[in-house]
Length: 209
Image (cartoon, rainbow, N blue to C red; front, side, top):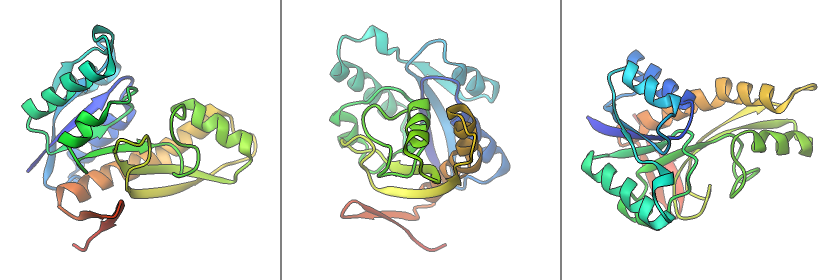
């Protein structure tokens, strides 16, 4: 049984999707053992506590630089014996220390179809605003491994979502979460926990049952 540690900063909707998937048995051979927040008042912490999951707060504001903060988070994950680290609305870009400690063992869900609308500055509603400005007819979500390059790690799973006439960034965000993010993140976590993802030359391959 693999230990899943989830990093959060805000409301924790993706964390809730993982909790629901765990409860329903969708996540095989893994369990969420700890939720770590960069903000002490993140609602995601309440979601974890309500489901009996251990929580820790490592407040970004208490650290002078990203190197010190990354070390604190990395040390905490090692203490928690994390087999998989999931970024679920975690709003801090950590440095290479954590990538070296957990190579191909950290996942992030991005609210667009990478390599479009990704990289530094593309997060939250900003992504959906840019999607609507561009006029594309399909967007979606991507689950990828975290590497030193922002949104540049091996892609594990993607799902497309239609962009509709009259969409606002908020409406599109909700559709992408419901139709893509909340589906492919738990599915990707389950594949990892079953040892069904291998990476070669920065490409992730899903293996058989």
